Length: 104
Image (tube, rainbow, N blue to C red):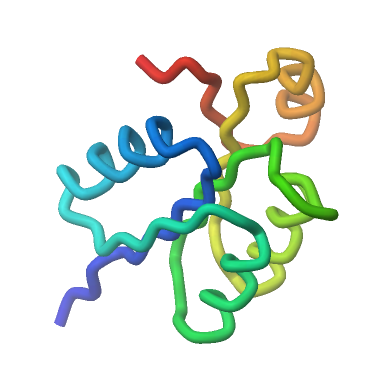
């Protein structure tokens, strides 16, 4: 039996989160959306996700890079999202998968 990919989106901007959710849902993946890294930690304790899409700029003590490490430790693939183009070099050097805002 084929398992459908589970995607978790962690994005504090409502518009960006909705756009990402629409793209992911249109592809037929199972989807959960959250606003913060704290919510992500709880969700990862409660369920198994295949991919976590994380905004680099997060409210709270941990940025998206730190949250990405947590998600990878739980066996998830990670895609980082940022509107701050200063992160582009760090993302390219890290080998992380990423998307730049504004999303097109």
